[in-house]
Image (cartoon, rainbow, N blue to C red; front, side):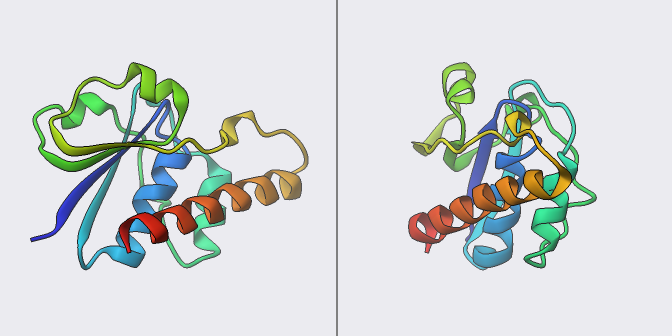
Length: 134
C-alpha cells in the first residue's frame, strides 16, 4: 500500500506543487503525493515551465486549500516553507517533516532570470525528495 504524503506551503503555488509532482513522478510506485496551501492562490507559471523541462506536466494543477484535506489521513505531512509550518493545522500523521525552500513568489528579474531561480529551487526539492523518500 502506498504511503500518502501531503506537502504544505503558504499559497500552494510553487514549492508544494513541485514537491507533489516530483514525488509522484519519481517515487509514485511507493508514495501518493498531494499538495495544499494555507492561503491558496494559483499555480506559478514559471513553476509549470520548470517542471515541464524535466518531463512533469503540472499545467492542469490548481492551488488547493489544506481544508480540502482535513478529513484525510497522511503518513507524512511536509511543510516546505516557514510560514506554512507556523500556520499549518494539526494533521494526524505518522510523521511531520519541515524542510524550507526559497519562495519563488519573491523572485524578481527577467523571464530567464526568474526561470533560472525556479529551476534552482526545483532541483533542490528534487534532490531533497530523492534523499528523503528513496
